[in-house]
Amino acid sequence: MAIARNEPILYSGSSDKKIRSWNLVTGEELRSFQGHTRGIEDLGLDESEQYLYSASSDKDIRKWNTSTGDCLQVFDGHLTSVYCLRLFDEEMWTGESSSESLLMRR
Image (tube, rainbow, N blue to C red; front, side, top):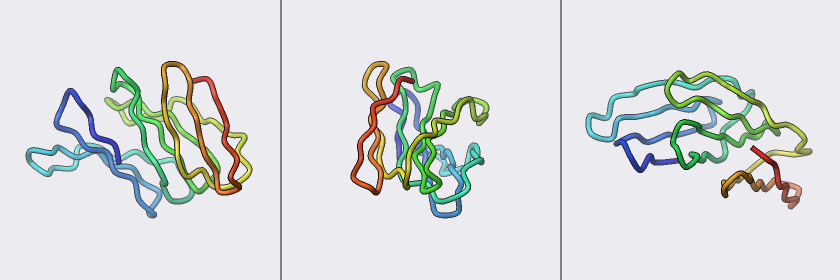
């Protein structure tokens, strides 16, 4: 789950392989993000809130445009499911089920 700071929007991911954005005031679903082949494990918004990053059991991290729902980039290279990600400046730290951590440039 990720919550925008500048707008009343919540992003949720689930085992159905989809990410959804929700209006926190009305409860309305705003958008669906699709592309992962297994469940979503973690989400993170960049500082501008223009990009959403998703970690998945499919071993990939995806970068999404929050306005359009388009997948802009796929970060591969993980050997197992990716369970967490954290964004710091231009860095992205990830953790996978093999207890490995990776530093990636975004």
